[in-house]
Image (cartoon, rainbow, N blue to C red):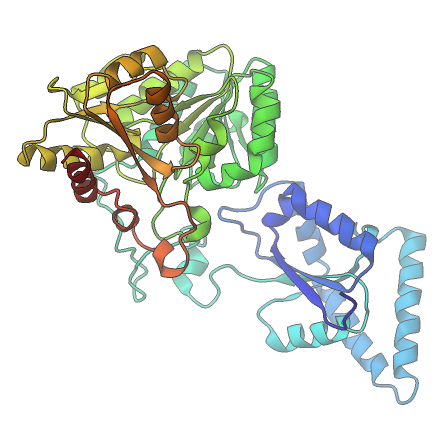
Length: 497
């Protein structure tokens, strides 16, 4: 805008592995405007950083003693009476000339940036001094800052990955109040067991993650099959395409990525997996509402993003056993990518319906009264809520059937239309946004097939959950969106009346 201000961008060393960062660095170096980039280097993203860039930054960090000397020398030069500033500019030009002759520039300099660092990120005096200095350069600058993740709190310093995102915990002893005794199993733990079992049976099975080895439950897989485990760093686009490359060579890759982060890979999944019709499995952890992680981690968009993608299969397990059946089916497919989406939640107790064989495009009835009143069609992650609503409605003398969709794409349209025609009211309950979701698709199907039933869609509010609204538990977020069991029953009862 032509003013005298400064733009300051702060980026972590983990995020620097993403392709967008390089596009921006290249553009900024070309513009030659006074952008100050603070590179916060703590050797961590959520898990330990991996890859060539991490090693490169570590090599830069080893030059810390030289950088300290250089700062002291520069400060001394600038204090020389009358000629200090001019002499300092001469020194800067001389250093550049020497670097050019001996090829000791670094990556950032090659892109058109001045490079300063590495400096201690917890030294406020040094940081302030450096920032004051670089403001006078009037050109793009990278300030390489070394910090410690969890600095100031011993438990977080010792286990930075565990304290990346937390709910309530005791400050005195660091114990997470949400921890469980081990009697219950999360969907992530179920996935961890299933993928490990699959790899033992089939040496073609590989696991891919984008800096989420612990979060996606792949630590045990890495320990058992290090040669078949790949961590791409925070580079979901590359992870999606890399998995497609593995599939193109006859391997059976499973890329485990959080639902909210798969948004970065839409183009790659469409063009590199679906268009090539390659059998890649994308395991989307944290699909749906995610407690305590804020507005950026809600996995509410994956259904809408990928339902329109040709050659795509989308599955939603209601239990560990269903996840196992779906994974086995996906690994047996010879073509086409498969998305298996599951929540950050405990697996429910198994019921007979969850052991029924997979039948493409069809789900299973968890309960069926066949009295033609109401049918609750639900995505697997909402089994508990649908079941609670079913019990409440039964107490109100409203007989409701429970239908677990299993498949969100493809669907056996003839079969589903026939089912809907058996009821007065078909309610579609999904843990995702309404627009472009499974509910809208089934409502359209009911209309085009002239089904006699009324339809209703219960889905997430189509907005971002900001501030404290995004920090509640999954149960609280479901209740706020009127998708807990009591709210579902109340809404269905009102529509049925």
